[in-house]
Image (cartoon, rainbow, N blue to C red):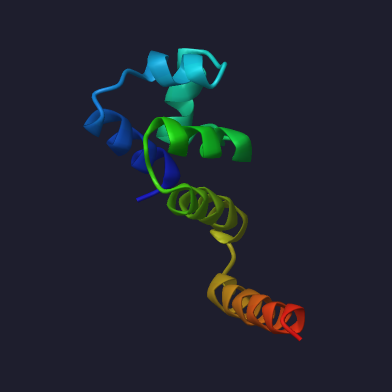
Length: 100
């Protein structure tokens, strides 16, 4: 499930209309619809606001949002999995440096 699908699921569970959330984000309804369909990318601040509006965990939504961004970058690369493993290793290494 991608970010847009997750937002749609949460919105429908809360019985909210796209136009209600769009208005809260200061965007038009067609733009919000494109975000749900994965045709447009939400901005980080919009993701945070959506978590608040949908009473959802902000880290969960940010993780879905960021995962979609990463996927878009690597999806057509044959060596994507290897690159992601290296990136993960680098992230872990950089975190250990911060704790030293």
